[in-house]
Length: 185
Image (tube, rainbow, N blue to C red; front, side):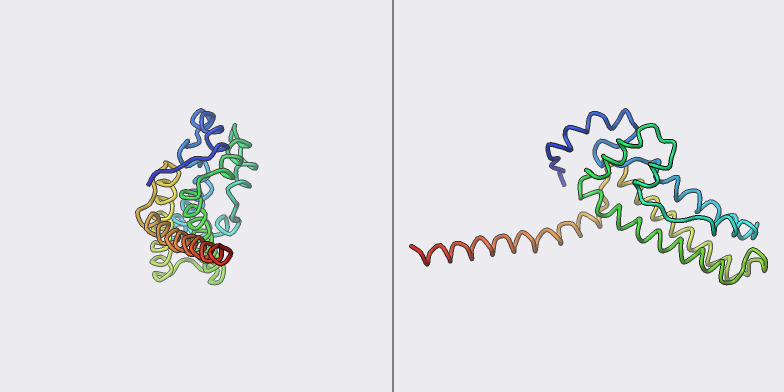
């Protein structure tokens, strides 16, 4: 799939690479730090249950909020680039963020509900944490691919499935307009 960048996107592309922002996807790997930290903490919980307290301090941050609160040098450019990011990358990227936020949130809430920091980690909780962190790492790997300008195969299929009905509807609208025009001939 070829990305057709609009005028605004083309104007900003030369500035991105120097700022550690991918010039194809308009996304930066720095955002992964927000998630890598919580995954690392969750992986420590089975051996150090008191780390669950630190996990409970984690809150989701949007891409823009992360950069505005970070020490990233080109934070304004990162936010602007994200706003202009091609839908082919931004759509699946945002979907993964939403799913990852839910997964992390439910995992942390589960640790809170069973009071892991005081009661310790059962074998079932160990298995759950291991499974959940593996899922989180899979999401992060997909995000990393998107950030580096690699479209995910499943996303290309979904994108094409979404576009096909839109293109068909446009064709129907054109045909319908032609039929209406014929009434006035």
